[in-house]
Length: 340
Ligand SMILES: Nc1ncnc2c1ncn2[C@@H]1O[C@H](COP(=O)(O)OP(=O)(O)O)[C@@H](O)[C@H]1O
Ligand SMILES: [Mg+2]
Image (cartoon, rainbow, N blue to C red):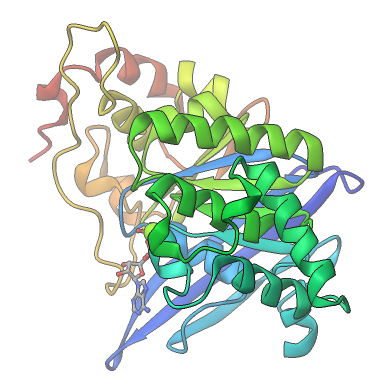
């Protein structure tokens, strides 16, 4: 994939992951390749179970014990994180790469003051005194929009939105270069979600970190990210500039996802793609989306499509790229999607 070696901070190449489940394997990530530049914001979308969280956990280095990395590279500033020892890896967590998780409730310890939790994270990486760490915590609270006088409270004394801001404060404590946000606002109402995104974007502008934003909400990505990755069944099926993907989606799955989003002011009903995502335990033959795809042919059922460059910086994994535009024009008709 095309990358600018000066600007690229994270480069992922051919990454594949299996989960061991009993005596079987689930192919959770399948030949993932992409890169992210300094200060860039990339959206990562796809149905539940397609591997979004697994990808972030792999980058962060917090995969569960039953996960196996089969192949690939994760290069941070040119250094492969899969080849460094566990102590060096521990040092990259939070300091270079940090994560904002789905549920602020799980990420915070309910019986410890929030300030102490963030102080501990700082002191685990930096040789500072408690009062120096505490000064940083107060600074961070102001940055994320929570009064510093509240830093010594416990998680249960905070609203959902404030807890999420505290998590963001923790993620930014050591000024990382890359922030991985896994559905950071899913549990919050739309207004709070909006405020938090505005704040995150502001912080990103000031601090310059890059961010991967995982969400199942396509409209969040369109509003917030210049580039988008679409995943399906553990693979990247489309990757490119968000603008281009919004106006000219190329993969039938992306086209379907777009139609599944309610559009403000539109009289059309959103339509969801019939069928279910692929079973990752089964051996893969052909395109993983073929069973649900109105364009699928024998070739699709037998030959795995490659992620091909289809337009400027815009990649898609489909045997029928020349038909994408014509299909997109009809894809708001639910009958088109009745494949079987
Ligand atoms: N610890 C685990 N053990 C076994 N399978 C897992 C584990 N975590 C996730 N999976 C499976 O891996 C696939 C990807 O999961 P996940 O990365 O959580 O997807 P997403 O975040 O897109 O919903 C799913 O099929 C899921 O069931
Ligand atoms: Mg997830």
